[in-house]
Image 1 (tube, each protein chain N blue to C red):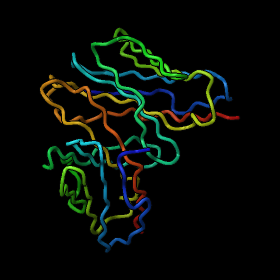
Image 2: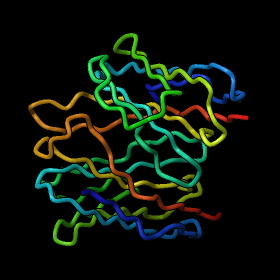
Image 3: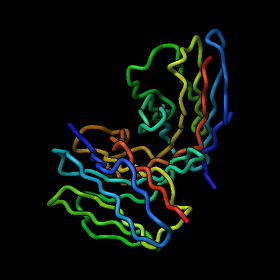
Length: 119
Length: 117
């Protein structure tokens, strides 16, 4: 069975602070994919990043960075110099690879972390 | 701008009404999804269509009836809903996973906020 845990239910920071959102996953698959999505109050889930299980390279995109560590089954997300527009619910998600037998992209979501950035 | 559109944005319906939610994508994707999301919860998968054929039904009650008229459109027909069906309904699309692997992500629409009275 697959599971994604986002232990931080809510995080509140002041603008310009750095903030890290934690994501821990469980899977028996050797091939899998990890994702982060942002859901602002408008409701749409915005795709942020995909990471393959065989690629542990960290990634930076502007103020966003992701740290993937297979040894600890974690895929953490850091926002540097947070802004009010970063306020949203952030979901980490896991999808099995083809070897797992699921061919249609079923995502296992974490419970989400509500991030509030105060001015 | 999102390339997955959903209409209507908001819908209020009575328990005896029949209504439809519509989704359209312009990315050439051949897999489309319906999700239901309750407040403060993650999205829950309802249906998956692949090449316009229903491939996954996550044990959804028959009062929800999906339809995929063509590769760009996905509908969700609603009939005799219950108040507990009130939620945000999200549509998504992606490439179909093939032999080369699953290096694809799902793209979501803005959702339809449904209230059943």
